[in-house]
Image (spheres, one colour):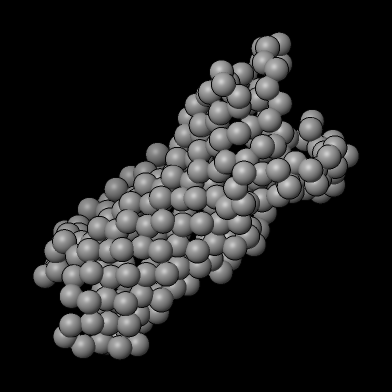
Length: 244
């Protein structure tokens, strides 16, 4: 309880101090829309006929959509920093084994479905980004930027066959990543390409339940988190709503 009181005090102090942090945020607001692709995780460990399963996948990439608001809280010389809040949806389409009891909640529940076909993750995205203006004049900028992003997953939706369609909500950290990108800004519009440099993600036990891959490495199943080295690329368009 004391920690909560300290946090409230710090927030009140920030919001009331001089040219407040909150004023800076609300005077510099951008809205962005991004589309991303990522290589699919093809690990099936010791599952039978895995080469055939992978070869028959309809798609080889995962697809994501993110919409968010960003606000610059400091600008000095060629450097600037912004904070962002967004909604990120990651959709996966494949044919692979999964833990159906995560949704059925009982091993006595009945379902003949063994393979997932469609899987969607819904996340709250929080970001902190540092920008460096390589080129900066009145009408356009060329920007190198490094964002740090945290995704809090709050809903998982799966579809397996025609009748197995389930949602389950649980708020938890999904991943923390460091990214790098290049952007070109002209007037109020900014076009960005972002790739992942490093990420730690929570191991998804829907896709990697121990009872399916019981002969796989015990080290993997004793961990809660792992690094994600899959290729990731995001294209974004940003529009400046307010800039005072």
